Image (cartoon, rainbow, N blue to C red):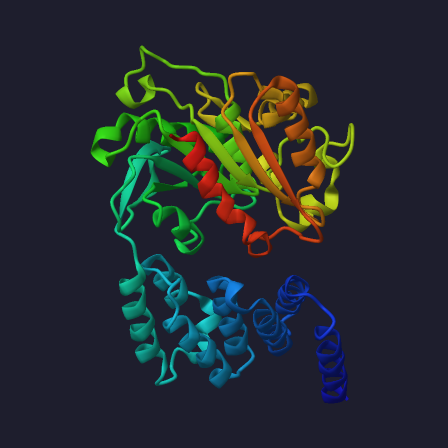
Length: 406
């Protein structure tokens, strides 16, 4: 009986697959993966990849291979790994992610595994841009790190801070979506910040400001102009980019650390679907904490779980006072920090975004215009919350940086 039900479900998925967009198929694949229906998850992803064609991003192939692995379809898993091994998008940063991915445990004893990893590694070495891991700060006994990624061509003397963040969780996502900057000669700094659940949003904002100061302070070492620094990020990375870009200029000339004596200002920003106003989330007077579905499904609660440190007791205490909590929520909403001296801002957002309401970008752009700040907004019709669907418009970001980092 179970086999019959599974067959019926598979036939229904196949029928629906031919009427869905690639993005919808990827969402279905993620849901099926969560339900542990790995074979149908792999089928959904494979169909979505075919629909995307050359625009399908590398991580889709990795996910697809992992799903086939878990679905006990090793031939299909190795088929997608073989495609990855010939990709000009794979980088050295992706190798450890593949090797340590638990989805591949079922095929790691297969005699094809080690030769395939070696093949992928060889391709990654050919593709990779020179990069160096740097410690830009320390807190709580831990290092804050960034990757300095250098262009293969002659550097143009300009820097872009690339905020590595999704749902205020930070990890390096590889160079695939950054290559168009590198091919224009930009020096990139992929910044990792303190992540939730351990750290809340204000901590991440401070980390990013520290990162900008570090890059500016070491401009000579990096071969960049300290007055030509841009910033970019997607989703929560877009939010943090705008939080830094809109922040009031504050320089602590008496700081013990010389890095903290320089400015954290950037000269231009370009971001994708950024949260900008947590107090008016999709509509007036509806704060993000009231969006229970979003908070649960995307697991955002700890990002807004603000704490204070009691030096005397040496304890972290959760802020429960609602007035103080909403004061902080307003402070971390970039829309309330806009002023006439802010840098140019380019935003790209889909009108079918189910995670960050389009209203977040529209209201932000409206206020920029009212304040006289240079801005640009592109709204993509029928597009949700994903960078793949933002191509080719995303490539306009490099033109934006070219124009305002002259």
